[in-house]
Amino acid sequence: MSPNIEVEHLVQKSRFPKAVYETLGIIAYFPFGVILAVLRVFIAVNALLLTVMLSNYPNIRRPLLKVMSGVLGLIVVEKENSSTKNSRVLVSNYLSLFDHIALHLATGSYTPTNLFSVPVALYFGLISTLTNDNNTTERTILKQFLASDNNNSLLLFPEGATTNGKCALLRFSNVPALISENLQPVALRITRPSFANINLSVLGSKHYTEILWFFFVPFTKFEYKLLEAIQRSEDESNETFMSRVEIAISQELNISTSNITKNDKNDYKKKYFLELAENARKRNNHHVTLDNFEEDPEILRMAAQVTDVLPYVPQNVIVANLRRTRCVDITITNILDGTIKFTPLPPQASKEPKTTPKKTEPNNFGVGSFMDRKTKLIDEARQRYIKKHGLHHLVQ
Image (cartoon, rainbow, N blue to C red):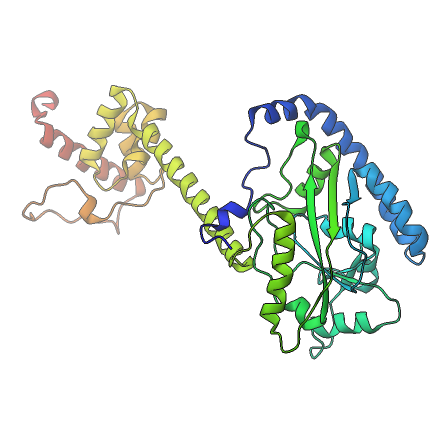
């Protein structure tokens, strides 16, 4: 177990590889990939229909589905020196949305899901854990499945979340140990051709995007190896039992184990996207600031004049209106008559110097027409502007 492994080492943040030659290969292949993806969408519909129609004939269904899956680009290969299947509970590392399909076609095992009901789940190599009985747990359903006479096996992914499979596994949960005393580890590797090496599982990506990119690449090779089944020792704890299974898979894949859990990955994902949103907000604010202040000198001069008269109006509001009007008086009028909507700056942000209050004739907003009030406000604003800049000689 490596103490230096962080969550960011276990995930992919970009769909495309960093190597230049691989990026160039994807660019060259892109038109062919788009055509292939469109064709495969129609083929996938036929494959789904075939899955439903042959659901009661597993001996026919699986070989036909292997052929259909190969057309869709899903290639399943069993690695040399793979052990025989000696347990009804298989435990595998988790790399992509399609892992359970590949291993279902290869081993006939079923993976638990709470997304579909019983008949629909079976069509896709899944076993539904949905129930209307609050007293029936997922563990109970899976034990009942194993106790049935159909001799089907379970495929579990105790990591609970996908990784890139490059440096470490997520820490395994104890669920498999609660279901069976005999577990068979499965080491899974996935590769794609170098000229279309699209990353498999990207942080935060949607299922439909994973499917479309899967159809885009010419093929995705799933290579699995069944390791020797591991039997629980007498008085062995669930944690120790699962640790042995985890170590067996990590050694076969030549990667490390870790104390990072699926919850840690979920927390990292939330933090990562919050940081992205915050950075985007800062960039937008930066652009707004540049738009406001990287103006021609004339706009800046007029904005300063309006701010002197109406210090409680945000400068970005003033600049935005001046771009259209190119006139100080019109902008002041637009602000005073309510044409421009804005949130006034707080008193402490006002640039108006503090002066001793003077007795002035109160504005009677309760009488007179709207035009009278508007005219009076504009006149007051102009008088303040004239007084501040000493322009009395120009208006006499």
